[in-house]
Image (tube, rainbow, N blue to C red; front, top):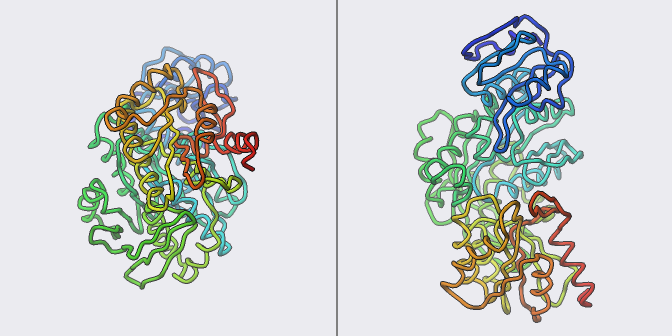
Length: 487
């Protein structure tokens, strides 16, 4: 594609050189650059693409997009105000605007995004649909799974995935849309047929600074939809978003349990095997059973049902699909092999998510709840003491340990968690090594106890310093259970 075509209708500060040249690929990583490629300089959290301009030119780049002036006569230089947003628009154009042909559903919110995407994928696939998924755990193009680097990929990677989905004749793509992606412009140029808001609780405040900024980032999704927006109005921030977007031409559907909504649930009954409830929709009422226990499951399954209905499935077909749905990796995942007591692995790494899973466990706990958890390093520090207080209040015993400390001192993170738990209880123990912490919890557990291992869920690595080490909570628990004769 010609460079001038890629730049059509994009605001630029200055162009130096020829734009009537052919561009056969676009990258923001100089190591991927080849002959006749366009290199886009973007600022990351640890480095900047401007440091790699000469490397890109040496590898064959014939044009550079940059926010800074570059002194070179070797290549065409396009200076812009915001390289990330321009990259998204160029990527969309380079891959021929794939979301205008591919139906894409965007899910945003603090918690529940992954669960909803997997629920919708499972129901649609049960009825023979060819489904794509982009999210935290993996990216799926039909039956092909790829590792996910981040919740929402960088714009070039994202548009390439959409283009590949079209090539593979994917019927529908369901994707998690992170607040970072919305704020940094990764999804500029994307069109969504449906947008869903789950909830908003404190997270990523190291990036957004405050909850208003966090909400406003999430809200951007609902100005990119064409068919319908679906909002949880039990959530305080959901109510605000719903009120602000109701003036849009795109229809708005609300859901909830406590507040008046278009879709709501009653007769909720939770046990360790799952949750039963009645869902009420404008088109009818159905009794629902899902094999994932917890009140949060009700909040996740309601929008999943609505999405599938909008996509053309009847309520009866959706219910049949739900019956065949498997659990979601690392989301209230019960380790079936261990019988004397329950061991549950969950991704809960925010105060709200931790409170939800502990409240759910209390509804069916026959004995004590033991919680093993930590907090990630180099991330929002404000939630650490809050999560400590939540675990102390809702657990019978807590084991505070490391999560992904990254470059922070694990003991400093643990001290912050301790400052919260001390406010409500002295029934806790600090075990810095995560494997030892899980082992300690399993050794003190009695019959009918519930052990919640929270924070990492589906993750299969642990980042300590700059080392990424193999670590899977589920596999570690099973290994310990075998060693202790519990399996």
